[in-house]
Length: 285
Image (cartoon, rainbow, N blue to C red; front, side, top):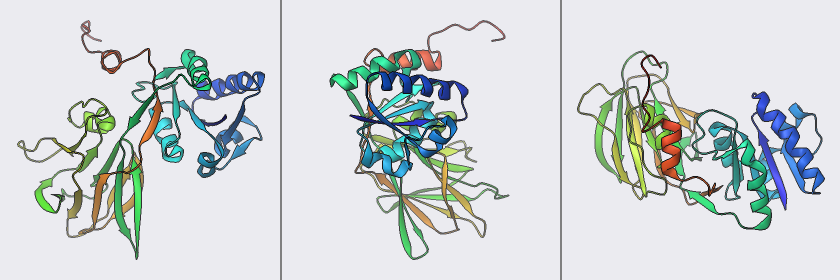
């Protein structure tokens, strides 16, 4: 079994953990390779372009936070990912650094379980080509630097839902419901729920609210504005600047992301620990 290791090189704790992990793997004669960026930071030679890791390796290890895991998931495709959290919230990266070796041992023994997570697929025309992007958390169209408030036109299965004047539109999976969508007022949705949520960002009508829809729907978003360019983000990465009238089509991807599960934790516990549900807070904290 060969491990692909992706590290958040901007976190000292993550790079130090990567060095410890290298020693642990070498002591057990286990094969591993870093993506080239991580390898350069660590000063090691066993590296490959991140686009090739899926072909070279059997399983991925993400050392960082949820952002690192999201980045890793785009290149792991369907290969399992062990998410080690050295960040803050860590909704996706379920394992602490103390749990890392136990998680790897379970993988080696074949006694691990998988959380399979639905992805979004965004389709957009770029010149004469049609480009496809995937997102585990969300696809977002924002007003960006546009000085006025544009209207975002949303269609479901070809039928117009509404035209929202807002700062943007978030289309999130159940996994992504606890990310940007949550901060914009969207609901928390349990993983593996077969739904998406459409969450307007700062809508300019009080009656506009997030909408939960079946994940078999095809969503189309375009911007009604006389000019300007509007960022299309997939999991926080700008993929294209949409021009007025250009549309992005979003639907359920045919490929799932496979995350190695932490069997010592369940979703209710994660919500309590990460969102501090059920705790009383002292005044001023």
